[in-house]
Image (cartoon, rainbow, N blue to C red):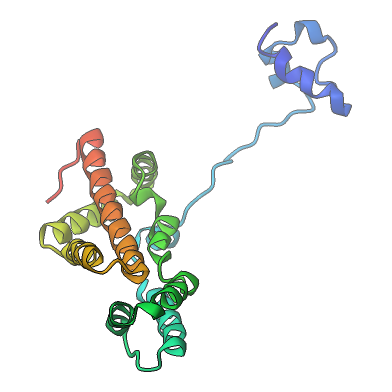
Length: 218
């Protein structure tokens, strides 16, 4: 069977005959068929503003503030003296009978899953193949500098310890959970552990991009 006959076989099933002889239909026959037309400029054009929106960090603090407030409001219904997150932890440790209810407040607030929003909004930061595609797309439209700036900024922040507080918090909650096996402490440990793993992948993806594309970062 010639390569032309394969697509030809699909069309008669819906009443479209591209060629009078299905046994000798070639790619050139399909190309010259009066029923088919060449589509020009079929690629989707991406504007500089759209690229900027993709690459920009954005203000994710509003979302985090919202889920934190949800958690605090729910926790105060359980124990009105709670003013902040530290108070929830203290209540869980000092009043074990509250632990289950406070843990439920965590699970229902959205607080525990908020870390996932970064990967949902910027998947190319955490997946090497997506990062390589982003590199090629931006290079093709002359905006590669935007990606380079992101990579250099992230590596600089990492070197300067901008993300160390996540690792310290994870270690602290892990130690505290050993001493006081409360569900609230286990739940607090979970997002910090995920943030650390997520950040490690982010750095790894940049390093792989650097090696794959032969880039030099300042």
